[in-house]
Length: 253
Image 1 (tube, rainbow, N blue to C red):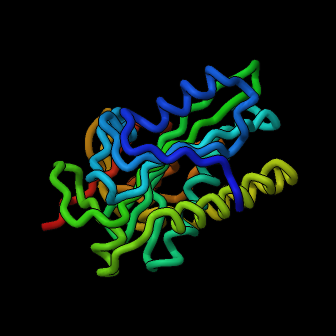
Image 2 (cartoon, rainbow, N blue to C red):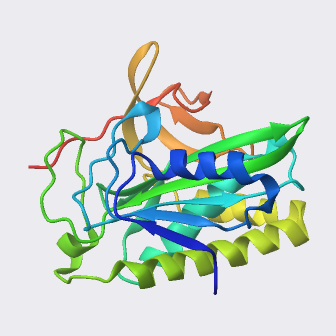
């Protein structure tokens, strides 16, 4: 599938680069335009974290979509289709891939990738979505204190060319995005079901932390609006927006 691609040797952030390009060119910049970089000097992760990546070893890229057909209240569908496209891509190389709410890609108990999405609105509709992705491909050593990072090379023992993996992801993303545009609510429901089936720690008891402290809960599902639904030991459902609750992930030795 052809898509407009600019591959940079280095930039501060592919999301920031693409945002500036969109602001300069407006709607004349083609949908699915993708900015990839060998290295980011200020790559961003979720919760304002820095994304660690050695130069030339991983996939660091951002894509622009113009989902003007989608109401702002349904914006979590963009997160779901991006996360599922990433999961479908990596399952072509290894099993045991899951999605850690809301936008992390996990292999077993290890973080393999992350997604950061920035939306622009026009009234109550989405105007523009920039999807930034960091995916660990060939890096063999991680130095940050982030819990359990892992790369595809560490999992399989093989070195990979990055461009074909990007192509596979874009194929999955484009297919799902066209279906979201054409089928509307029916496809949003399908995305939500698939996303829930793919969740990290789904229907398992684990520890979480919210503003009141640590507790044990069963992860039930996510709502279509993006809220996470947990069931605690007192049999009460707890619903959380992003950043209102954290997973307790023990660091592997």
